Image (cartoon, rainbow, N blue to C red; front, side, top):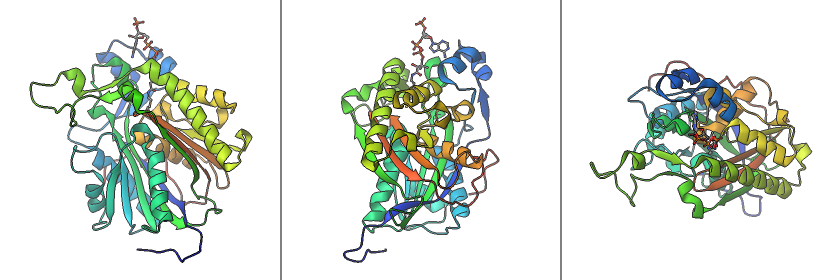
Length: 352
Ligand code: COA
C-alpha cells in the first residue's frame, strides 16, 4: 500500500480512465406500448426517453460491471488497482457484496472490494469514497463501477416505472495525483434526507420485511416510486447541491462548461439547468437512448459525451446526482487528457 510523506498534502483522486457498457437488447417505447397502456408520445413528452437497453434473463448486475470494468482497465492501461468499488441498487444478491466477485472476474484477486449504496447518487458517493481512500493513502488506484439492472426490480406491468429505467454500467479508474492537475476530483457536496425514505423504495427483501414465500405481496417485492414528489425533490436537491459545490470551489455558474447530472429524465435535467441559470445546451443528456440507468447514468453520460467530443480536455465539468434515500451529491473536475473513450459498447459480452 502507498503512503504519504509526513507534511506533504494529501493526494487527490485523478480520473485516468472511463468506459461504459450497455447490454445489446434494446426496448423501444413502441415495444413497451405493446404490453402496457402507454404510447411513444406520452413517454417522450414526459421523460425524453426513446429507448433503453435491458439484460437477458439470467444475466445480473455483476455481468455488466465486469464488462465496463474490463474496458476501463484496458483503456487506462492498468493491470492492477488497490480497491474495487461497485455502486448499485441491484446487487447480485443481498449478501455478499457484488464488488468482490467483480474484482475476482477481472483478475484482481486479493484487492479491497466493497459496494457503495446510495441509489442513483451512488456514483458521486463512490467518487467521494474513492477520493477518501486515495487521500488517506489506503489506495493509490481505485476502480469505481456504477452498475444497475433496474429491469430486475421494476414490475414489468408498472407503466409509471417500466418506461423510465434501463440497464447499464459505467466505470472509471482514479489514481493518486495533485489537487491542481486536470482530472482531480474535488469540492464535494453530499447529503441525505432519510425522512423521505418511502419516496423511492423496494419494501421487501431486507431485514425489515424478508421475502418469505407467500408472505410478500408483488407490490412490496418491486421497486416503487412516488413520481411527482420525487420530481420536485430531485430538482430542488440537485440545484442546491450544485450551487453549494460551486460556491465551495469559487466557481460561478458561467464557469461550468458541461453539467452532467444523474440522467433521471429530461424534464428534470432541464428544470435543474433552468433553476441554476445554466443554458440547457451545457447540460449533457443521453437519457433518450438509455433511459435512467441508476448508478451507471453519470459515467455512461460522460463516456457518451467524451466519445462524441462534446467534452474535451480542459473543459470544466460539474457532476450532480439525486436518488433514493433520499440522497444527493455533486463534485467538480477539469476534464483531463484520457485514452480514447469509445461510445458505450453495445456488443456481445466478452468471455469472463
Ligand atoms: N403512459 C401513459 N399514462 C401514464 C403513464 C404511462 N407510462 N404513467 C402514468 N400515466 C398516467 C397516470 O396514471 C395519470 O393518469 P390519471 O391522471 O388518469 O390518474 C397520468 O398519466 C398523470 O400521471 P402523473 O404521475 O401525474 O404523471 P407525471 O406527469 O407526474 O409523469 C413521471 C410521471 C413518473 C414521468 C414523473 O412523475 C416523473 O418524471 N417523476 C420523476 C421520476 C424520476 O425521474 N425518478 C428518478 C429519480 S432518481
